[in-house]
Structure formats: C-alpha cells, structure tokens
Length: 571
Image (cartoon, rainbow, N blue to C red; front, side, top):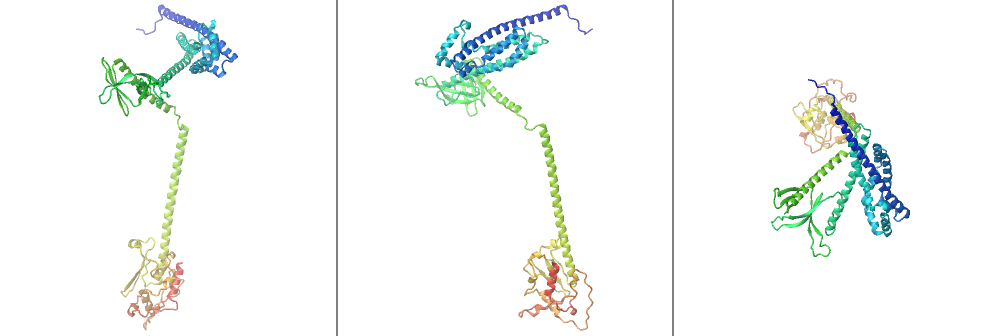
C-alpha cells in the first residue's frame, strides 16, 4: 500500500482554474464599480467646492470661521480623492489606497466636525437672508440634480463605508501571492477604523439627543441628566408594588447606563408643566441586583425585584413581553457597568509605567547591601569601643586597687603591731560581699578590741586609712584636729606617755621596706591630746596594745605632723 501523493487529475485541475477565473471576474466587477462610484463622488465634491466654498469665499457672504465650521476639510478631501481616482483608473489599486490612507486625518477631522457643520448651517439658513437666497440659487442648478447642500455634506461619511466594502471584496478576490494583497489588506484595516469612528460619533450624537429630550421632559433643573459617559437605554411605564400591599401605582422609568430614574407625571392642569414629569428617585445601578419573581412562563404579566444598597423595588407590568425586555435590559446594563469598571481598572494597571527599571532595582539592591555592610561595620566599631572602654575602666580600677593595697601594706609595715584594714577597696570581694560602708578596726593583744565605723565625711577617720580616702571626699587635715577624739586614740596617747619599766631593753627595729620608709627615719610618737577636766579618768586609760613599750616614747614630732606627712604621701 503506497501513501505517495497521486498526481492531480484533469478534473481537479480544471476546477481550480475555474475557481481562479471566478475570483478574477469578481475582482474585475468590484474594481469597475469602484471606479465608476469614485468618478461620481469626485464630481459631487467638485460641485460643493466650486459652487459653494469658492464662491462664498469670493463674495464674502459668510465669515471665514463660519465657512470653516460648515465645510471643514472638504477641499482637502477633494484633492486626495482626485489622486486616488487617477491611480484606480490605471488599475493600481494597491498603490492608490496605500497613498490614500496616509491622508485619512482629513476624513477624521471632517467626521468629528459633521454635527457642528449641520448645526451651524441650520443657524445660518435661519439667520442670514443673503445666505439663504444664495443656497437656494445654487441648489437649483442642473448640475446638482436637485440635491441639497445638507445631503452633499454627508458624502464623505458615506464614501468611507463604501470603501470598506469595496476593499473587502478586492482583498477576498486577490491571491496572496499578488503584490497588491498586502497593500489592500492594510488599507482595509485603516478604512475600517475610520468607519468605526463614524459609527461611534453617530451613536454618541444620538445618545446626546436622547439625553437632552429626557432632560426637557423633567420639571426643573434639579436632576441633571446630561453627564459625561452616560448612555440612554430605554424608558417606559411600570407599576411599583408598595411594601404595605396597597394599590400599585404606574410610574415612568428611565433606564440609563449608570442609574434608573423614577418619575411621576405632573398635574395635567399645570399651565406650563402639564406634559412633564417630576423626578422622585434616582437608583444607582452599581450595586443593584435583579431577580425575576414571576413571569417565567406564558402569563398575563410579570414581576421583577431590584435590590439596591439602601432600597428595594418591585416592578410589575401586565405585558409579559415588556417586563421581560426590561429584565434583559437591566441585567445587561448592570453586567456591562460592572465589567466596564473592572476592565478600566485592569487597563490602568497594565498602562502604568514601572516605578523602577531592572538597572534601578540592581543599583538599589547594591546600595542596600552597601548600607547593610556599613551599618554592620559601625556596629562592630561601637562594640569594639564599648569593650575597650570597659577594659580601660577595669584596668583603672585594678590600678587603683593596687595603689590602695600598696598604701595599706606600707602602713602595716610602719605599724606592724596594729591590724590595719582598708574597707571598700576597689574590686574587693570582701568589701562588696559585706556592705558598702568602710570600716577600720584596731585589735589589742590584751583582749580588748575597739572598732570604728563611719558612713560619711563628717565623722572621724582613722589616720591609718586617710591615705586610702580619695581627695574628692572633702576630708582634710583640719578635720582630724577635733576637740573630741575617739577613745582608742586617747588610749594610744596614754600608752605612749607611760614610762618604760626598769631593766627592759629596746629591741632593734628592722629597716622599713614599705613606701613610707624613705620619709620616716624613726617611729613617731603620739603627742597627747588635751583632755577635758570633766572626763572620767577610768575612760582615759586602756590596756596597752602589743608593741607599745617604753621604747616607743613620744618624740618631738607630734601626731599632727604624722597625719600631715601621711596626707602628703597620699597626694
């Protein structure tokens, strides 16, 4: 079994040839009709230009702006159609229409001005007697064949519709391999757009006339009907069913593309508004829902329900065909209104230009990364500075602690038989665990111990702890010279004044290795403080602390000098 294509039979080849011949005959007939109609059309345009435009310009019957409002671009249209006629008479349809489509803006201007031209022409015919006589005289010429100027002004619009059909027939009967096929196809598309423009303008004008008519039917000007983007759909009488079951009343309803208007007739005995209506309610259709209550089958009428955002309306009619037409019109209008809003919203989103391009997005991403890196580096620097500050504060605290400990060790070496302890040392675990108040204690070997505690700068301080007190505390040597010294200091003074027992020897003292060894070449004695006469003698003597023998008699240096030297060492 072979699947190879068989050669064409003579019958099939003859049928294809016949089909091509039919196409060629149709194309020739369409071309001939087009040429004849184009010749007649150019003659009619020449009549308007010659007997109206040029003569009115020469006589000056009408002003220039009025002439332009009536005739618009008809003179330019006549010129481009004469060029088209020359091409089509030579059989060059593709080239002729390709050049013709480059001048379609003259037709667009004329189409947009046609309603204004009719209105101005009507006004001038009524207003100007000279122009009315001139117009009647020109239309009576045999060349016009009893055609009126109003009919001649419609010729360019009618010719565009004829071009649309001629070009469609020419394209359908032209082979794709013909060089004119692409030219005719493009021309047909361009002419179709102009034809659609004519239809849209005609519908818009008709809608404007309907809106004006309804506006005139309503009493007063409170209700505005003439608004942009509003289209008239239909009107008619319907009965409204009241909610309380009373008798249904007939009302006049006007259906527009966005609202439903309910009106009632004015009083027939009114002198001026007897044939008009009074607007009662205007229902917006944007959020309306339509339901058919009954009237689905063949009956005497029907009932439809309209649900709005703040109202509900029941409409009834005895004519089932009429109520069904109203139902279809309402459903179609509401559906188109909702879909039109959605489509416009989508078009706005599609037509909106992007805020940032790809290059801007990349640069913004790089700038964000750079800012993030800089922010991280700044945070690292802050953390590093904070750690260095905390480390320096710790080092300063440790250095201060070492200095205070050196002072404490030096005083202990100076006074080895006295237990000297500086309370509140920096970074001292013992002071931080006990309390924040400083304390100093002197323990005697005799079993009697006296302890001194102070909380502020106004109380008495131990001379051994003076060097450990900061200079900012406000203490000075003048505060040490108090008239009422503590009892332990008075005991020390009493011990130094006691005589050394006979036969005792002074043991040799080791050299001082503390920080005060260079300043004190010998041990200082305690000079007596003046005691009051009323003091109890029993309270002025205490057991001598260990180490205070007769060898430690008071020397010429007073205790105040020792305190002054200790204060100098601290500074």
